[in-house]
Image (cartoon, rainbow, N blue to C red; front, side, top):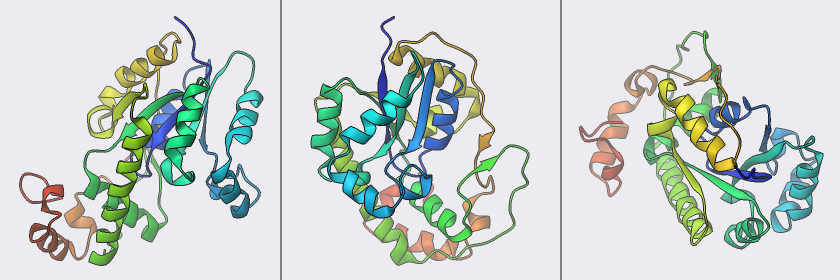
Length: 241
C-alpha cells in the first residue's frame, strides 16, 4: 500500500470527531491532532493568531506536519468555520497531497441539541465507566433555530470543499455511534491512508445515554415547535428527537 503522509478530518463539532481521532491514534504509524485553529485546544497562543491563520494557514499546517516523528502519517481536525474561503484553502491542501476524511452526522437537529446541552453543562466528552449525569436543561427554541441554520450553512460549505475532491466519508450514526462498528470503521480509514490494520479501542462514549425526553426540561415545547415548522423533517419518523 502507498502510505499517505498527511490528512485532515473534516467535519463539525458534536459529530464524534474526538472519538474518531482517538480510534485513529490507536495506530502506531499515525499521529492525529485536534483542532489546530481553535484557541482552546492549546495549539495557538491567542485567539487573534487563530483568526490570522484562518486567512493563511498553510505554513502552520506544514510546520505541525514536519513536527510529526519519522514516518508517522500526520493529520488533524479541521472544520470549515476555522478558515476563510475554506473551499479554496482545502483545494490547495488536497493539491498539495493532503487527504480528507469527511465526518458527517445525519441527524442535524440531534447534533444541534447535543451542542446546546454541552454548552450549558460544560460537558463535552465522557469516558466509559462514568455515571450518567442527573441534570436537566432548558433549550430555547431560538438557539435551536439558529444552530440549525448555522449548521446547514456549514454543510453547504463542506459540500463546496468536497466538490471534485477525493475523500473518505464516515457517518456517525452508521459507523461510530455503536462501538461494535469501531474496528471496521478504523480499518476502512487505515486502508484509505495506506497503513496496515491494527486493533483499536476508545474510552470515549456518549456524554449522556438517557433519552432526550429525560434531559430536556422543555422537551414537549421543542417537539411541538419543530413538528409545526419547516424544520419538521429533522425529527425522526415518529416525530421525536
